[in-house]
Image (cartoon, rainbow, N blue to C red; front, side):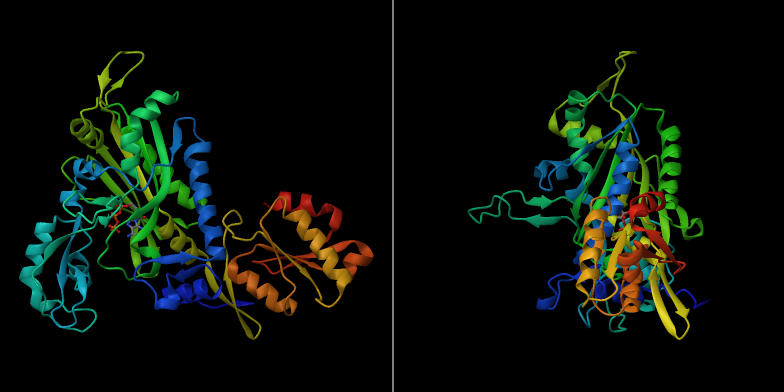
Length: 462
Ligand code: ATP
């Protein structure tokens, strides 16, 4: 077997996602719906496994973090207080020729004018105005743009607006999940045994009116976040910030991501309240881009909500009796981006004899299907019945798939493409000697196993 150069280009990954039921464009039969995607049968399994790993690492394995599932809709006062209504925006321009709406910072970056630095919108606008002639619209090549303006990313709804009266304050779909954590901080404190330092973890959907939405599921308008806010005593910020940087980095290594494909990006232009901000970036097919943010946010979030709501959000230290607004270390990751990183990391094309084999070398804990079970021949009822029995037995412990369609080689290839680590084939040896053939995805090696040992065999493997 000779290995072809790894072909984990975005196009190959997108094609695999569609072909094998990982990701579908939203509303495809109606020509799709920009920047929204659906997870298919294997995609939902992979996404769930990613969330399960995150939840396990961030709650189950810790005694200092509790979970939360706040609602998507929140009082509009939350978004006023947090600063999102005023300041959650990206700089936008429109191409006068083809009317594409484009993000200024992306346009500048692609023209090589602005490095990856996170500048203020005003600075970006100024640079754009001074360099307009050098910038080309990626869709039509024109350099004729409208002046830059800030575009708010919050998505509005008409929830509860039964009269069509738009004079009321709009209700938003949440732009980030962490606001649900801040406004529940006191509830959690009063209803559980947590003591500072402690964290609240949440996984949930967020919505943003993103302007530039290329790059598949990397940037979508509806997406899922895995966020954790860690509440610490003022002054302890940097100690925990460094711990969280290490912990979150290790999380990706534990998911099988190679360290050479990760890098830190330090924010140079911090928002006024932030003490330190780093992003973990992954080497996507289109370059190193943000996967997760680890930010030291000071007391900003709880302070603004305390001021705005009039509710005291101080923490009373039970031992020292000190009273203070806790500072926050935030870790904020995206399910979709982790999903894309995992696919990029696992996608391989290999030459096997005359054939090209596509494999998703997923770690077992993330694989959508752990074991596929095949009767060798579909038209031999005794094989099918025995294979079904084995499927019914294994499914109690692992996510399995039964497949009796097509020749065995094709069935193996299909499972390779969805990343199934093991296939079990039931043949005449199963009936005569009580043995099945277990085929391993990466090595393609086949081993005969006694049926009575099969559970133990997989317990050892997983
Ligand atoms: P970017 O700079 O790429 O727009 P951001 O800095 O706005 O990202 P955060 O607000 O810090 O992102 O959100 C935390 C995480 O949520 C990101 O690291 C990313 O994984 C995920 N995320 C944010 N926006 C999107 C989106 N539009 N689509 C998919 N995932 C997203």
